[in-house]
Image: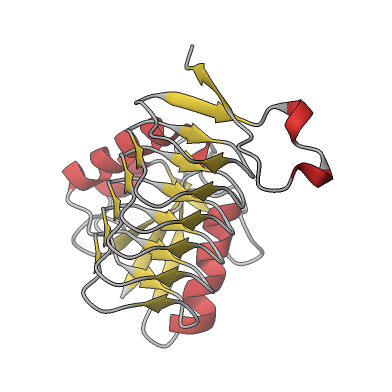
Length: 228
């Protein structure tokens, strides 16, 4: 299987390592796609930017009939990421599911197209994870939870049982979403936040500085700030 990695940042380079180190006998990375950088710019010692999505889709060797696309775009703007991946899907690209050998996905769980599960992740039973979701190292997703399309869970995030997370949501490093909560679409959860009540769509949860001292313990350390 030949692959293009869509993106050139930290996540993209993690994907290069994951694919080459653990699936190199079956998969080959043909190069990187980036809509902002110029073709030919180096990404690693062995790989360069081939072009933007429109360019690579036009060439037979890198078009959707010859390669699949690994979604590794920057998660800082999930709605924009979702739109870019929707365009790639319209071109006809297929998206592999990539699960690190040291991750655990329990029975009756479902993973959508383009889902990436990194090392140390535990996906409990009967979880549904939508297309293009990215679970970084050490994430735990509790039983019966549902992640809609294009959700990014940063390293160390804990999601309790029966949690519903809407599309285009970003959850920061070591944040926790308590069991039974609903986090609506487009939410941004800052690192180290405890979400213990339902969250409306397009909300930004940020730590309250006065509560983020080392002795803050398990305090609920967020307030709600609407997107501009």
